[in-house]
Length: 78
Image (cartoon, rainbow, N blue to C red; front, side):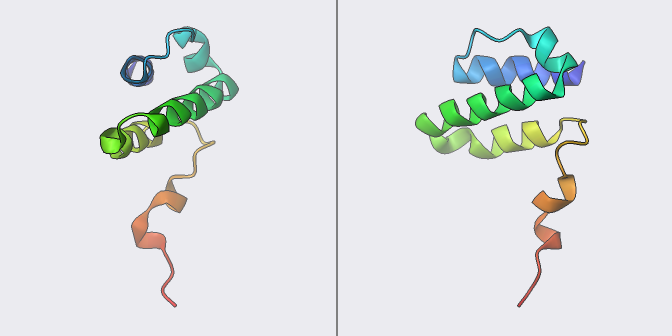
């Protein structure tokens, strides 16, 4: 249910209204497309919510989103 709530909040915050949330929750490909739209719209708006948007997307339980790659502790030092 958290995924449904997160998507609903992200879509409301960005003003995107033409998304079937049930379909986005059920289908990773649809959800990925929705996330790209959210990021595109958010990039044109106030940037204050960027961290919140990224944190919400990273909570997605899909294996499609590699969590390790986004961790700051996994960056290599030169």
